[in-house]
Length: 204
Image (cartoon, rainbow, N blue to C red; front, side, top):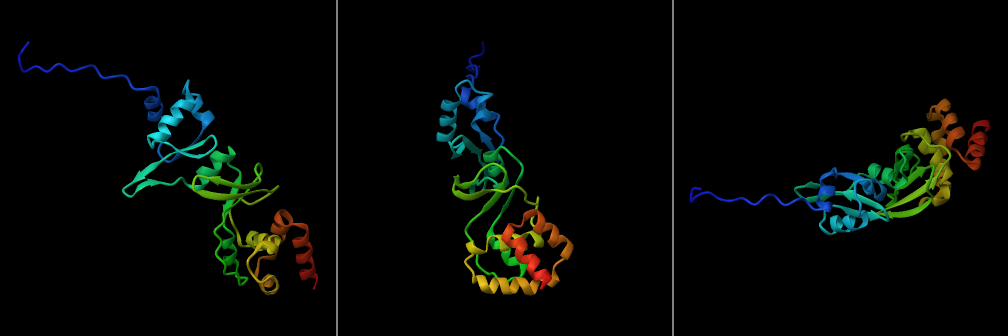
């Protein structure tokens, strides 16, 4: 054998947690049971991956494989986070600040994120964010002016606005909305008080 030859050691096999980390997709939210399918000691491996920074723990049984940028790890997208928590794709995420776009004189900015869904109710801390989950029988797939108008009336008592002033603006705004779409939104998403108020305004 030539004196210059270098003997190379065979590569060491990857640890079980390292093998698990290879299967993680950056930017994806995982539930414990998702990873338990590919690990025989999932709780130990999860602790190792969290300690190494390859996974972030968001909540009990909920983890995030961070996507990296030049500024550091990026937070999970709200949609993926909520979908992982609910194990469901049927939900609507928005902030009450969206009511400001309806043109009823509301200007408050809310540091709150609502999640209308069919499964969970309550305020939950997911990672560094709080989400206000509310079980609703129906909600649209995306925000519309008519839905926001109806939902604002539903939640008048929760707004940090002058209730009387908002109602006055809502009445003035009524003729400028599409009556057919508003009627459908009220029927599908309005509570009893909102539907009654809109009928009275229409009859008046």
